[in-house]
Amino acid sequence: MMKMHLIGACIADKVIGKLAGSLLAVSGVKEIYADVLSEYAILVLEQNNIKYEYKTRVPFIINKDHTGMCPMENKFKDENDIKKIYNEVLAK
Image 1 (cartoon, rainbow, N blue to C red):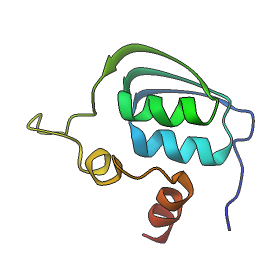
Image 2: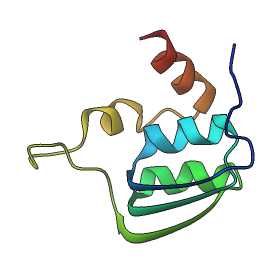
Image 3: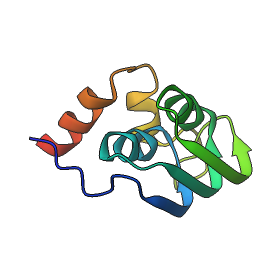
Image 4: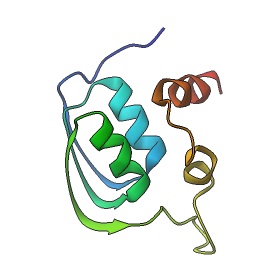
């Protein structure tokens, strides 16, 4: 069962990719600010009518070794159902 603890919240973070954007969308946030925001996250935010601002827009979130895409961004990049993403993460 989903709990909506963030309904109407405004969230700020350093980095927001598709996974974080999806979780925040399911949680009911209304606005997001990120220093770094991925284009995958932007799609989720726009589809869910969430206002957003960013310092830097990037095609995708980079992994910690700076050798490619973040594993979580890559895993969910083609998934359009944010509730499915939420449930999969919750199940782990």
